[in-house]
Image (cartoon, rainbow, N blue to C red):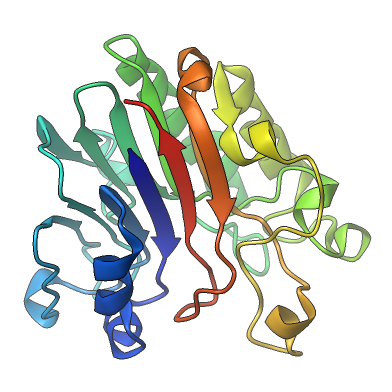
Length: 251
């Protein structure tokens, strides 16, 4: 099974940059999109053969997640089940035969770290509990923009960015706790080299210089490690300040 995750940074803008063609051609069984920033009635997106499941934010033009699937789903749920966390449309979960697939857009700590406490003391623990509860029923795959570069090799300029949003000690620690709860960072299961990034600033020709951050992930329950067949980053795909990532897995 091929899974693809992509923060599209506004689905209406992404459609204008060829999103529908990419979805039709990339050949994923399931796409997980983040930061769609639109309501269903604002978008004309048709991808033959795929069912589309939205979870928009209450606030217009903000956040939101979406799953497109061409394989049968046993069910689709939205949110963590906690009202204070679920107003921004940040989690959509699809139940597959062999696993739960959780599409997540983790809150950004903010340029001035104004949401750092919320992010690390409330959201991150709640999300960890959520995937741990799901795992009691069947294995879990979670993916999306997790808004953290875990290790120094996950961004081009770690010394310069230490303490900035996405590379604070607190965010790195809570992500480490999530992995430590029995989940595998699938890209690192295949590649332990730096220089592979999923997000680049629009400023300073960052993408051209590959001065980026790896903040988008596919993670799986440890029990699924033997089922992993490949994990890739696709920087050649334009249309957003993020690029798609993919996972090949036997489910």
